[in-house]
Length: 331
Image (tube, rainbow, N blue to C red):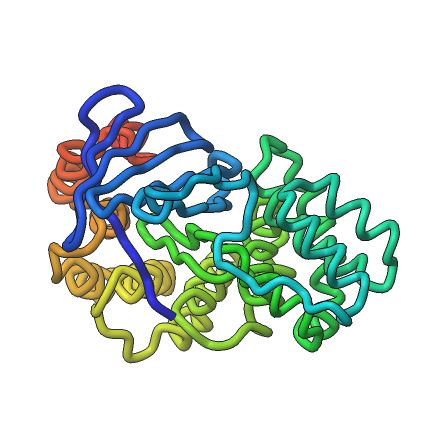
């Protein structure tokens, strides 16, 4: 699975300058709703539940819009999907029209009229609920649970597979690691895991993670929940022979270091955190996470000077990093 990362700097309240190898851009907005535009003529709208790591991203190209006489329809499919043919089922035609209309109410009407595909409608409504302003984590988690129970039906239904291609979701699976992917069963599973974690249902989240195909995103999800459950030995097994090749693997090394520290091996933890920071190309959040965990490890060894030095390094780049200010007060 490919990972995409952007670096950015704050240039005014609510306004950031984003830069990557291929484009320069600006983004503006508030937590939970942002719009970005770059030098490739692409516009990204990002909406979600602040603090949850659950976001939806929609892309529009200025180049594609240039020369169009007709305005883009709000909610039209991100990827162009061929309209149903003349003799295809009525429910498929109705679902296509609802998706083109692009709102929850239209999908709910299709679900009521064609109960045989109501679970598909619910699965396509779910990412729109994540885009909304609701902070009802328990309610969203219940909807995700109901959909997850029909995981096999969704996987084996070509209608869901075809129409889910209309969505791209970006999941922030960990600090500094965001993964854009086509919506489908895997994205649904990762979203469900995030909701379970927010509800502190770590055993259930781990069980869901272990059913997903093995990749970096699921390895991170597995480790996060193993750490919450204090399963240090399991974390060490999950992160065995990890090399620092990108943000995700650097973060897995950090998780390994935490497990080593909590297992009574602080020196091994410090060496592992050194490996996690061995490339300065990693996302700032990942590098600062390694510094924070190293500070905690130094503190456990009674090395207050080294611990404070790491915390001050974090403050130099991110004064809002969680836990740093409170930890500094203890020195």
